[in-house]
Every structure is written in structure tokens, then in C-alpha cells.
Length: 176
Image (cartoon, rainbow, N blue to C red; front, side, top):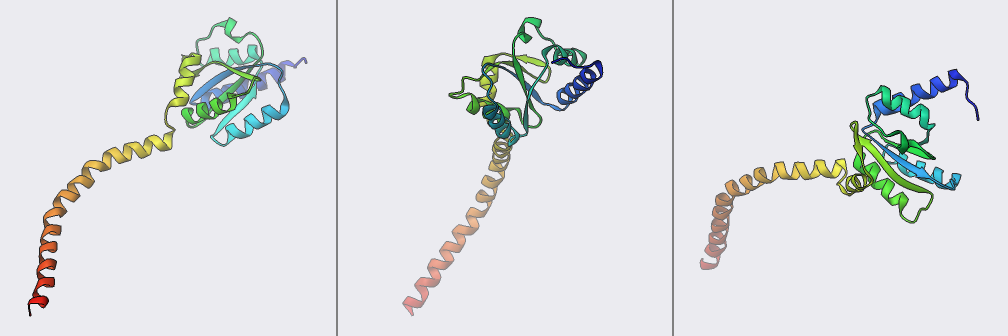
């Protein structure tokens, strides 16, 4: 299908916007694309603030080039879809890994994380990382651990004294 020059410019502008707003970009090749599978993938990725788009390779690489991304022209040969991670790259990579299990339609080819090129292995490693909320919880737990230990240490003498007083008060009425 031929696109007019104006339509191509609109597409490139949209690609630029998506590239600007994304934390990570994952590139997948596809074969025998079936719309139900594509729609299922899009719905699953939307849950983690990711978007899947079929792109025109030449126009998309033009947008990448303008934004300072390095790429190999041979990498962009064939049928590609691009997944944009707008918030949390590991959670989108996890959702992508789940989608690819038992799915012969899509195959990861690589990607970008903050303009750095990613290999297939690095995309897999990114999917193994904990998501942003989990990382925040781990960090908060690490920060709070010394404070809670300090509070327990400071409260221990008072708790011990209270236990002695209670034991003594229970013993006194029995003696009377």
C-alpha cells in the first residue's frame, strides 16, 4: 500500500513521539501474523503500559536516526513490530516473555534501553529483573530494616522491665 508524503510525515512524527516517550524499545520479527494473537499481545502489553505497533521499517529507522539511536540497516530487514515500554521496561519485558512462550508468531530480535542497543540475551535478562514496584518495596525494606532494628533494641529494656513488674504483680496477690 502506497502512502502519500504527508501521511509518511505523520507516521514519522508519531514514531518520534513514541521513541521520545519510551524508556525501552523492543523489536520483534513476525511471521504468519494473525490478528487475534496481535490483539491479545496488545491487550496484555497495555496492562503494563506497553504498546505494540507494526512499523514501516524505513520510516521508523529515520525516526531512530533523528533521535540519535545507532542501528544496523540489515537488522531492520523483514517484518518487524516494535514494543514500546513507556514506564517500566522490566515489566514490559516480562509481559513480552510470557507472550512469546509457545507463540510461533513473534520472535525477539533485540531492542534499545536509553539509546543503548540490546541483544536478545539482554532483553531476556531484562525480563528476569524485578518490576519497578517490587524494586521499590525491596529498597524500602532495606532502608527501614536498620530503623526497625534500632527501635526493637531501644524498646527491649522497657519490655523486659514490664515483664518483671507483671510477673511480680501476679506473684503478690497469690502470696497475700
